[in-house]
Length: 304
Image (cartoon, rainbow, N blue to C red):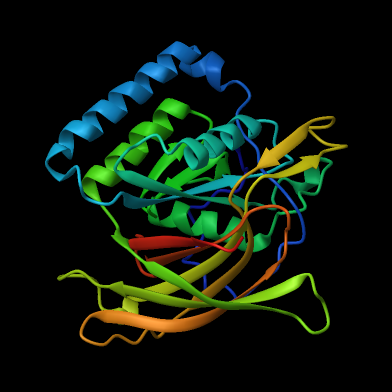
């Protein structure tokens, strides 16, 4: 685990972030000593089995219910030697979906504050560093570090500690189940000046549960993410390693002033993104409370 030296005690709440950015390449990283510090694989597997068993018991009365969405944000960097194990854990969450009644939505958000260590992470962006600091402020933490996982905008785990990650997801599903955000693809067009840039028209629908925060406190985020990317890193702490990634955020769109009709939201939005063919592209949608950063709802749709 690598801690950033900045002290966050005096940092005020961060301003709203820009509506759209383009991240120009790949990324992900984590704690190479995770197994040494947290025990061998069999102990981590036992932690997974216990988490799965407890989660299954808790929800035994709702076996036929659809999986509850869970948003797992990993703050990582290709410039940090502690991050590759977290990358592997994030891939496991995405591909294995270890909980039967949870749909884990993964986001790999690459920070830029380790770019000074000899390798500039091609997926890094200052907005992710700011977003992580926003979470630190809300969680009353004095520092930020990589790899860090934030679940549903509320729970924190060391991203390279598989047992910690699984237990945190278990708590999130038990204590703060999210409502589903439904996405339907209306069409995809290519940019007239750059065929690599595409625009997906997406219809977004969801209903706010009774007692939810007022619409003024909510923000809709639509992120285009790429799966199954890989980068050969020539310099820095991960020099000579081929790093593979899932959930890499390529573009990020924020929508405020949400309009509801009888507690229901249904609008179409355009999401611009870089085509990563033949890699899998996906749009992730989630609702976030701009005051508390809690995420009450989420959903996804594949683009290819």
